[in-house]
Image (cartoon, rainbow, N blue to C red):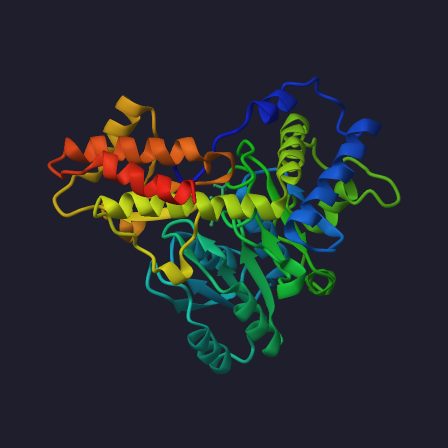
Length: 380
Ligand SMILES: *Cc1c(COP(=O)(O)O)cnc(C)c1O
């Protein structure tokens, strides 16, 4: 129950154990097309350029920035946690100029502040933001940020690594131009693949580039010779065949449940966890209005050694939760309820184990009362 990887089901692992086909085998190519269609449904987009990059979420991030940002481009980067800062890094390494909109960690970006920065930087070409900031558990208002970017003739790059599959991600409705995600968070697949999707406007900007993309491997104009399918595929790199079996199976599982039901389940499990932990006197870092269900940042009570609590959870209960990152280190625990991990038994385990660990760290809790509070939500 950390910030990813989430639990991977036996079905996904079983799919990955099947015999490895050639990366241009006709059966495998059919599966590639199904993966692309599944990802379109998941991103709720008609973007023809929708496929999984053969590497983890960070590679999806680099794909979007390296292809879209050209030497001298000004990019507005909204930074309210670790991943916003990585976006800044990416802009600079792509030769762009990053203009930061700094937001207090744990808070959602304020659209009015972004507008002020856009007004002060009329040459800006792109607005980049993190939809679900995994370092804090804050959800950004993607619809409002995209509408604002469009008003200022900017493209948008959105990080949906933690949001995809856990909260609504509406690429076409919001008008996101480039989005990247990861296989190991709410999709509950193994780490190592990064679904991305780019709009026609984004493709036009890439086509108009004066300089080649500064990465051979992530240059979309080359990668698409393999993923496109129209007019025949040719070798670019050897696709991670078995990893893609796993992603395919995780998409099948997700659509068997239904995307809407999966999103509702994340919310339900989150509310049960909140009821249990709040009854123990614990506080959440992020305000309810912008709190992610799949990433719960819980404030470490005064005087409690947070690392020692996590060590006890792992040793005595086989339960992993995450530590705080950057300025949040030592101050919060990050409890993931992602994908297959977002289930009743995990909510119960987390409450029981955390109550036990806290009782051993001079913070007295009533585990029976906490479980009762959680069950009131679970059984409602
Ligand atoms: C996990 C994560 C990433 C990076 O994904 P990797 O698969 O670890 O490379 C990027 N952005 C956010 C918001 C994340 O949570």
